[in-house]
Length: 211
Image (cartoon, rainbow, N blue to C red; front, side, top):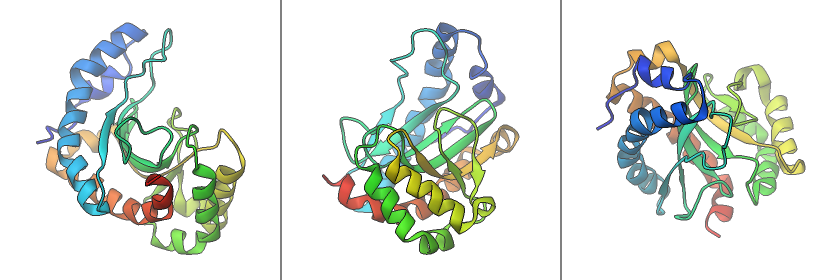
């Protein structure tokens, strides 16, 4: 059972230095990711009708700068998630997020971007008003889907299809203050609601995910 987020969890993402921050991430945050994974790995597998696997971010490539965010990802590949369409739950010092999409290393993200662009009206219509789009998973910045509008959503999808380093993640965020006020069960429901919509978007990526 997920214990919920605390002020100390967010403070861990402000610890100075790589070693100190990673120590706190491993001690405080990753155990909570495992709690969430115990629920969401089987939940997503059931929703999608296919095996889904858990990947906790290790930040192994970092040698100097501490990560600004950390996350747990879920994908159809037991070996990794970065090349595939995937779901993420994670946090910055400022907010938590639950999202679905492709990051820059996605192998077939161009096909997904083209499909979203082609069906942008249908995709936009099914997204709740509090959904956001993230174009850089390493940045805390995000844009409201309603602020973007259908044309803005289509442009981001077209960029995903055309630009090698482009990213597109869709989902919801909750501020630090909102997150610490949620019980563990309330946060799980928040993510379930988000991923229920995201699972319908997964259908646009399913042929690539099953390769």
